[in-house]
Amino acid sequence: MTQTTAESPARKQRAQLKVRTLRTDRWWLAPALTFAALMAFLIYGFWAIFDGSYFVDPYIAPFSSPCLATSCPEGARFLGFAPFGDWYGLPPGLLILGLPAGFRFTCYYYRKSYYRSFWLSPPACAVAEPHKKYTGETRLPLIIQNVHRYFFYGAIVIGAVLTYDAILALVHKPGGLGTWILLVNAALIVAYTLSCHSCRHITAGRLNHFSKHPLRYRAWTFISKLNAKHQQLAWASMFSVMIADFYVRLVAKGVITFPYA
Ligand code: FES
Image 1 (cartoon, helix red, strand yellow):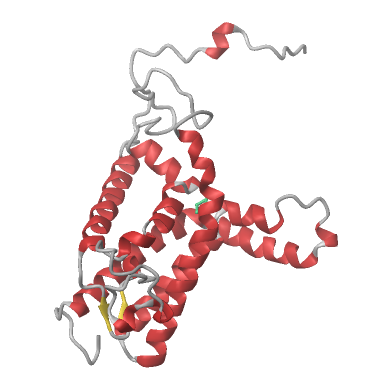
Image 2: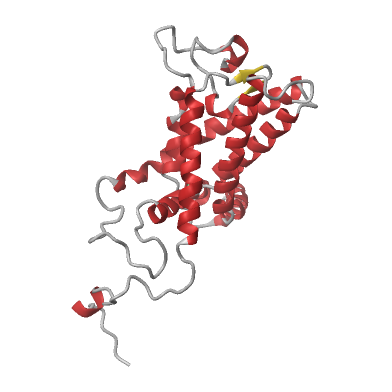
């Protein structure tokens, strides 16, 4: 059998179908649900950033942590540190929003999900997209998605801060429901961050001989197991951070009250 390496012009073209897709299943359901869930997250995040009830000792809402402005209440400041002086009058959460938002926005999994559900590019396998041409992530603006690996380092810091917040809550209020909500959230955020494809690559991506780097190999083996669950962790951590954040705000507003909160 002979093989040719050059593609014929006919093979480069898409199938000439008169209908958008031949699929008969409910292919639209997954992108529709994804769209609804991501929109809910965006709307909640927008509201939360501007909501002033983000701290009630010993809980701090994850969307506003670390709290780095002088407007942060005394106990809410991260390690008592407030590098942004009185001149800063916007919500404290805006100062750190870029790190977790940039990390999720450029995440390989979220890219797939919002390219499908928001840009319909394409909405599902074997369903034609409405756009005339496809340039992918090879040029502006989508080539900027490659900054993801740098957001990973920022996300590690945010994961560490949320873990610190949860441990502080555990020390000061071990029986509080909020403590356990914050602990579960911190665990899911850290698991999602460590399951990142960039993390897997950083751990041992360029090694030729695992046997010469046993520690990195063990780390890579562990990260690879998490990485296989990256999609699930992306959703679980997204919902957990919303739930934890909303819970703390409800306690701070007095809707849910101590001693059990
Ligand atoms: Fe999803 Fe890095 S690939 S967080």
